[in-house]
Image (cartoon, rainbow, N blue to C red; front, side):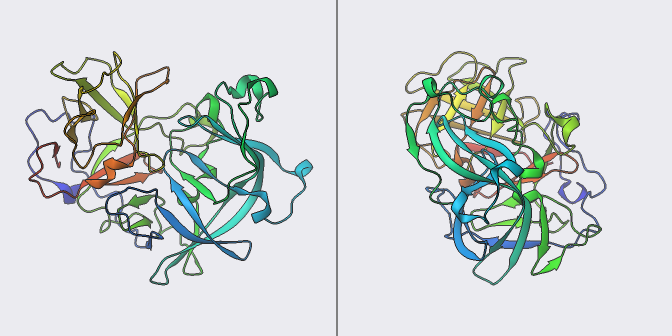
Length: 365
């Protein structure tokens, strides 16, 4: 984007990160900022938004590690299970399977402390029960945990609405995690006025104060963007992008060539999940280069179990992912704002540190 133009680092690779180009957001002016239910400077808790659904005020946890809004079926208008789609949301970190039905075209209103209101319209999963189902496989099991695989009912259903706004989550166990079910990229009105598709660019920005919907030249100032690859279900919906990439090195080892991991900045958890080459060990120093070490947008370092810094998760766990994978947890957001552009397929980072930190570096384009 032209407004971000500064000198390139010497290892800059034009094929990975956007170079200055005509502004993709020129002409788009409709946007709205909705403050979190409680400000989140340290990111010790998951962010939440105040909502109105079915005429009742509630608070919804906002999760970038999943896709799809879900809530107890009693929170939604009465529906006939025979007339709606059976469905599920599976959380790979906790192995919790939420079982229910997708109620179509549910309008959810979100409001902040300054009176700004936005509305989304998507299917919402009306949850009947939540179970621990470690071996869940949608191909084998459909949308329900088989009785012999259930580790017990965790709760009848979600006590607080839980809204997944992430992307790149449409894997085998979550093939229903499609863009049409992502509330924050399916906004239909701002302050009770229907959005103008010629002036509203879908997408969102996450900061410690708020979520901003509608991407503009002004609110994307300071971000560096990375182009995303098409996800496995691209043909089913052309906003189905894969997640961004990251390279990982342990201790003084070099970054392994060709071993980029899928990167997930997850507001839903405090811990990190890591699958990168060998398993990490206690007190390993872990280095990250986003998207890779040859043309980084950002680099940072944490020490598992040792000296902590602001971007350190509460703990690091070896991921059970079958492919290289890093879930940073939400501590990543102590030093970066992020944005998602679902139309052109971009992920953006904006550094909000002082520049004096010795554990993180940002390379603006």
